[in-house]
Figure 1 (cartoon, helix red, strand yellow):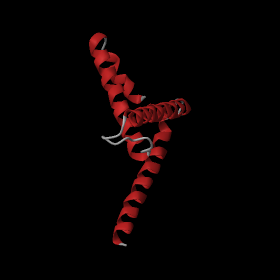
Figure 2: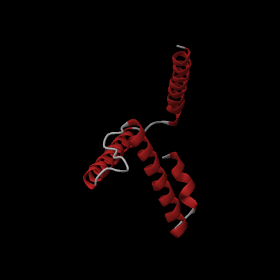
Figure 3: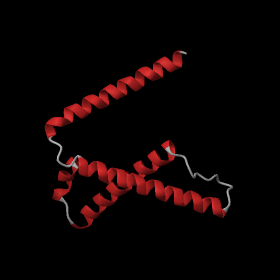
Length: 109
């Protein structure tokens, strides 16, 4: 929630547009994560109405679970000190390097 300081200068319809853009970006990220990593309930284009309703229900359920996970993460790290940020960045860097190494190792096999 560090980025919230940028919107302090706005009010009215401009603030509403910034909040709407933020909500749409979050929905897009949740949708991509939900559909790529958890493809349960995806219906094909020629599926019937029942399959489409089941897919829509699964999509809403995945978004709700993502929202709950995000809320739990935000409340657990709300009091995180700024000095702990390099630890998280270091862990992210190590995971990225490990992923890159695994990509190169698996492509050479």
